[in-house]
Image 1 (tube, helix red, strand yellow):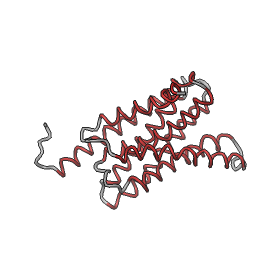
Image 2 (cartoon, rainbow, N blue to C red):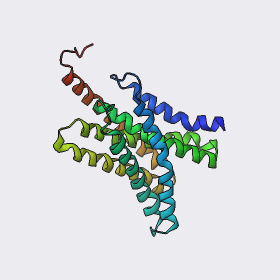
Image 3 (cartoon, rainbow, N blue to C red):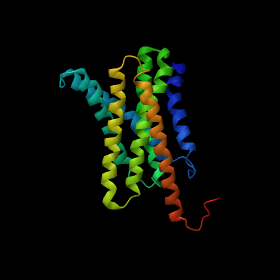
Image 4 (cartoon, rainbow, N blue to C red):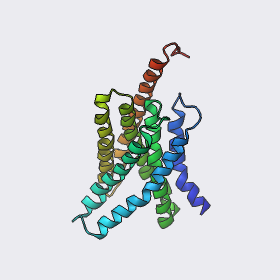
Length: 229
């Protein structure tokens, strides 16, 4: 059991560590980061319950609508709602890059519990593939969602709700595309892997853009600091 938990948690820890270490303005880890992870972990159970109820009641007439479209919408909506209610206005949300960290934390909390449940059912032989596909994809959906929350937090008020809207729209579109790549192609070499390469490129591009926004924000608020230091 200890080995299974370690294998299930390790990908999330590695991905978050990478994102956190890229934040050059980070001090001590915020308690909100840990809370965000717990919020994401707790979301797993209401999301699974909602999906189970819709499946049991036969709300959707085909598997594509139920497992691809609906799961993309409901998972990203709950993550977005947590970020909006519990994180967006928090005092520890201090610069645009923090959106990346909080978005990734919520997503990785969800992905970690989901991964534990999956490995408990199907065993450790699927661990590597799940680290590369579901866990990484959830982290990157969170990165993109968090990027737009960071834009919203530090943009002028007239654009804030537009960026908040983009936060959920972009993550749902990416999640839907990821699920579709698995559904449409039995061979992951033709579907999921090419999409994941794109998703890594897109997610890391948002990380870079958020870092630049944070640099601008930092120097706007600390004009006497030499940027070369």
